[in-house]
Image (cartoon, rainbow, N blue to C red; front, side, top):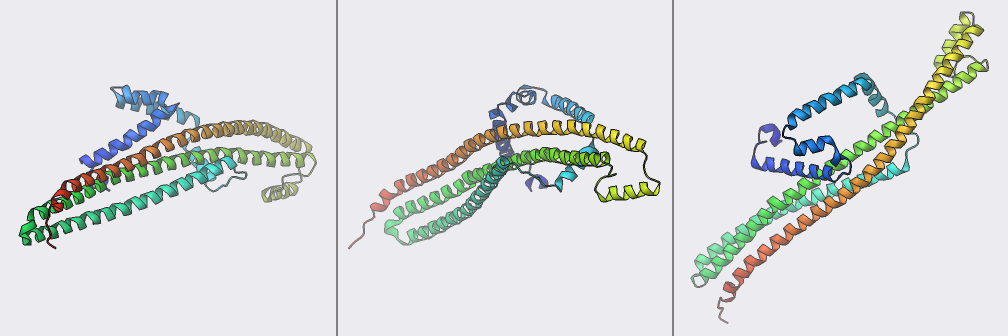
Amino acid sequence: MEYVIGDRFSPDFIERRRQDLERFLQRVARHPRLSRTEVFQAFLESTEWNVFKHKHHARSTSQDDSHTGVLDTLSDTLLNAFTKLKKPDERFVVIRTHLDSFEEGLASLERLAGRSKTRMGDLSGDYEDLAVSVQGLGYLESGITDPLMRFERALVDFGANVKDHSASATEQFLEHVHSLLGYSHAFKGVLKLRDQKQLDFEELSAYLSNVVVERDRLANGYGYGMGIGSYFKEKVESLRGGETDMSRAARLLRLDAKIKELQEAVLHAQETSNAFNDQVLSEHDIFRATKRHEMKVLLGAFADGQIRMHKQSVQAWDRTMPSLERIYVEN
């Protein structure tokens, strides 16, 4: 929302974007293949990054246009969006289940951290209110005004310490959690792309089977295929006087050519799907290693922040306790 209303140049917003960029670059740098790409090295080293970016984008766009059209890509996407895998690979089902559990855990962490931030803010306000009350009491008790004022300052310091910790450590914790959620969503996108490769193979295989059945029926003298369209087509041909042996032979030749073409396409789709499966499994290993590293950094930083806050609180109370202990109370 800050980006929309024009706060994108504030120091806090720029710092958050810088941290997100740093996490992204660290992920790429830990990747065994992406870290060696020309684009990544140019981003880190080139003094003319914008020029390189535009040239690379133009080159990539021209290569994509030469292979597939926009309409073909759109039709494939719409087709696969309403199609389910006939034989889901158990390996990737398990991976997707683990990703769902991981995201649920991160969402739970996010809720708990947000709740903790709210309560820490309330606690800081309560200590500030208590400090005001102690200050008023110090004005009334002239004999112990100085110790009570020291106690009041300790309460103010403790409340400010709690508030500062909530504003810094908790915010960084939540931002890192959001980053991990985005990382998990991105890997789910890779799994979805893998499913599309398998769908291509399954749909082509089914199409090949239908064409083979149609060729076999025609070769055995049963005419067209078994679908409703084939039924009407066969009736139209019968009304026209039937088909000759020459037309049947021509259809057989066309079907044989289509079968050969489809067999090559099915083989290519199977090889592509298998290669993509291997690549996704390799990427999953990298994802798991990166996730473990970032979770260690995330929880370690949060624990360090808690330790630092409590150490500062202990120091503040240690400075205050001697003055409180010197208060003389008559029996």
